[in-house]
Length: 200
Image (cartoon, rainbow, N blue to C red; front, top):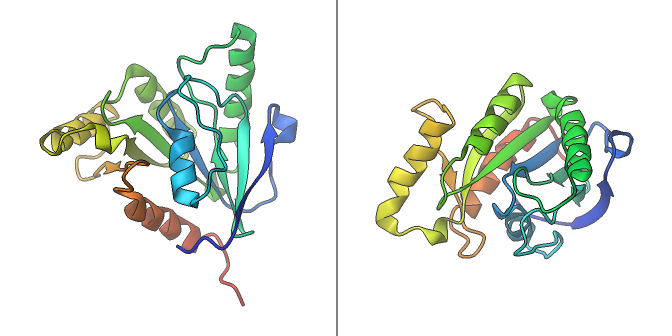
């Protein structure tokens, strides 16, 4: 898909601040330090999302407008965010509110660290997304951290832990090398094709 324009628009910290304009949204969810922001920047071809080596720096729901027709949404990482408990609870409530509405116009890309594998936190998130009826796909990040011979087993392990259909392959990507980015864009474009009216 050709990126004609992309820009950061706003951050939301409360349910009242969420964007609900009816346009389709592609939301990125994952454990803290899974590489969400780096992947977003690679997909958009611009350094719009803030990256950090410190887990949990994304503490708000961040909206990026793409091609003036749909949204990319960077959700707070779940897991080991270094923040006060009350802040983590507020993030959880906001994310829950976000995921609980508009499921028919949203694709959730659940990111899992290919090197670490799917953790209990990832499984819990997958089960929660499924309980909401969210349309979701699993994507393994940091593919460059694995040797070629390790990749098949790592991806199969992620699929098994998340309880995915054996026929469902886990897409693997690297924001560093660009591996899998084209395939991920195709998956996103297929979703958007049924959501965004064609330009006149």
